[in-house]
Image (cartoon, rainbow, N blue to C red; front, side, top):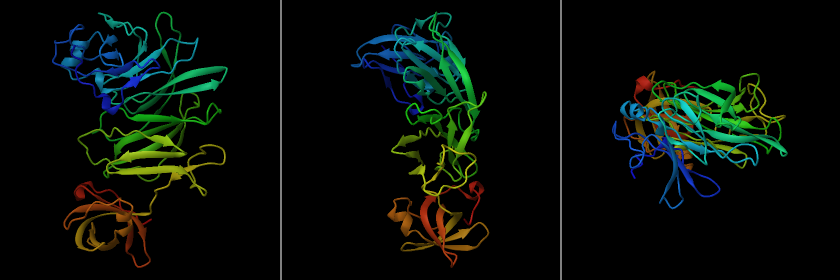
Length: 374
């Protein structure tokens, strides 16, 4: 059997407690779909040894998805953890056309002239869902987070008869450049089931002329139909200069830190003893700020290099003396070359020189971002 491509924008293959594997396939040549030998555009449940396709779902417009390159396989398929006695074994996943289907994992329903699983509109999805549990230990509730288009949405699974459904609870909107496809990735953190402690983290795809990415923290406790923005990174959470490819970046939370990978760097965020003022509190008496925040930032052209001292010509013709030793020691420096455009960040000394903690290549002058002195 031919399963077509599996890419899901980098979203991983999922597994349930019985070690069954779940994923979504991409497109193939238009008109070649065959539910017996070629399962394109399909949510697939497969045995752990990859020997058997146990179940699958193919949208009724499979040939249109294949022919229009609007494949279902641009998004990931998430297995929703079970809550005994409440709902069937669920899985959810969306694709380029923005439909997020919700499945009973016991029967993905195969192919039908009319779609059997229910679906909701989440926006074009080069993305993947996330999940959290809320309520009390005696009455826990499932929550699904979608991130298609530019919109974060919170959903709750509904009754299982005749098929599982999703009901939208609240939403929030992110901004990023239109040269990036719709969708982004989220992660969720909480202090167990403590009310008000659940935070939905999102990394917005590249934005601005400097192609930076932004880390967002949203409260998972709705205010009306809105997910309140608790905080967003005041400085770039990284950069994505590859404007021809999507920034499929996933925030990772561990040990009280949030890690954001991007182009050749990882920014680390966490709690601080003396937090900066934020838009509103994150939790009582605690706020967030970047551990890696640096003050000055300049774009320039490398004019000369002597050991770890670099002279940059700035956009206004001024020269900036830069000591790149700290950036080299931290592994946060590319090897500069004379005539190359770079972006440097760090601390300005009293003599006007810069102690750089990052040195990265940059695009040409027309794409330089704004300089800042602190």
